Image 1 (spheres, one colour):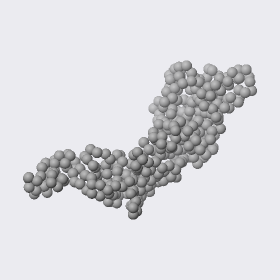
Image 2 (tube, one colour):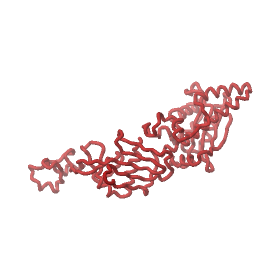
Image 3 (cartoon, helix red, strand yellow):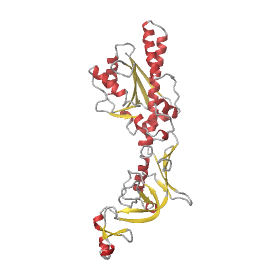
Image 4 (cartoon, helix red, strand yellow):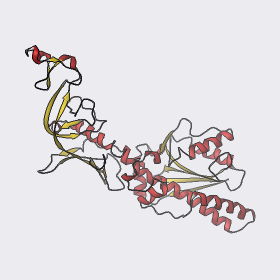
Length: 374
């Protein structure tokens, strides 16, 4: 087995942004990627594992390369020992392949899995599931790398590398000088996979970034505008791509990501909606006026014009200008409105927005932010 140590110095600003985006202490993170001779661990072997860790203000990359057919166990053991100080593994779709593959290998060799009792961040699964969010045909690592303007120096696929590894072993046996060229190509492919994975960690910010609660502000709509805007800034890191995303089948809200700023434009509409009271047993319903009143007042209404309110009739109506709220936003302290008792979404009157304190306004923007691209 051969161990190769190198540094990753390109795109330093973007690499630091990746660390900021993951919201975890850099010293706790271990990025990794593997290369195997097949998909099934029962009939194939892992011949290369690469890992990247943040050390002395740069990424250090360590690669364990099986340069023969008998060092798989040694490779696994060395990787496991190296990873023991780190608390979180970061990978791209490793939940589906890399981790289960390696765990079966560790089990086959009667070794302890390095993933036991450790955290895991799968960048692939952390991306917005809606492909239109990034306007990409798929979410493969190579696709997302191009989105981030990362140009690989290697042009091989994982399948190509299986052939290259076979050629390497054959040429090494016959002491062919081309063996070293194949070795470099295999290491370069794995190196680029790791670099691409680190850079793609920046995309984590679009779903899991943290907004600065003191940066939030909203703008009252100008004349003839049919929307309001709420915006804030990330507390750390920045969005690597300026994006605009439209939710709810193209009718809004409209989400904007630029540098370290997130804003949402929320459509307004005029209507008559209902605010429902939860404690309906304490209310009367007045059919002729189509409204509910508290019993403390309703006792003065003639019995012929009132009846006990039910959950469906315990409401007051209001005509005004409203906007839809994200499901995760809880605002029991202000009146919320619906079309019917169980209908979605829930709405807020625009006049109520102006009364929200800064901390509630932040909660509102945060709710929009973390539901936008899901």
